Length: 360
Image 1 (cartoon, rainbow, N blue to C red):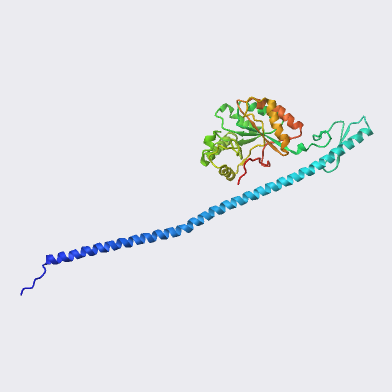
Image 2 (image 1 turned 90 degrees about the vertical axis):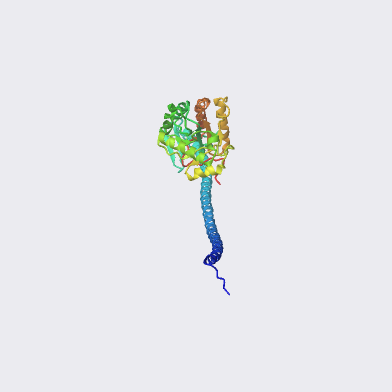
């Protein structure tokens, strides 16, 4: 009986078919293994990333806490200095009152001794008598009762925003004639004829400070970046014009403005990190609010706050093209401040900032 054998072709086809199935199964298994490997790698990356991210987050928080601690330390030091200042001024007032009493006593005694001789005796802080013959020595401002005026220990800082303008020369002339120094929070003025005013402010000993480059609220307060760019522009422009590295700033609208799209704390933080101190005010003339106010009315607005503050005063005035009354009333304002015993000073590194919003 003849045995049937598979032909080579049949054998090949049979074995070839089995090889294809096996290859497909092997490929499928390999894909599964590859997917599992990828899953393991992804899981490993995620597991490693989580602690790294957490560490970075903690570092940022620690830096913020460290900055906050430094800020609180500075505030505590400022408050301590302010408290010491208050105690010293109280002691000074007491000593001044005693000096005034001794002044009246010795002056009366000298006049009784020799009515024809003009001798004036002052008592210094070291209780030593200082005598002058034939001329009157200037004494501190006194009240009607004869005691030294308490106001003589308070400082008034005249500050002018938004300049320079066509009235800047007049303002500077009045300040120069009275030997008074002020502070100018200036903006960029495209009128190049007024650019020499920036240099004159510095040359005559006044404090040059920044108020913004554009003074356009929507642009300045659009974002933290736009604010930083505006500050940089006015800082660099003033440095080019005067060589002064300005470190004082006043927010357009003040730090308490309600128009900023950005949290004001972020903007204050930027100034803080840049080494820039910002100043608001605690007295204003309203010369930018009502252009119809007369010089006398503007000055009365200022003095009503100065007299009631019971502390140093930062006065907000404006160097505006459309309001000549600020410059027109400046001489009278200076006369009144001096007559009532206030010290008129420019803002410097020793000035305690008046700030509507403090950095938190």
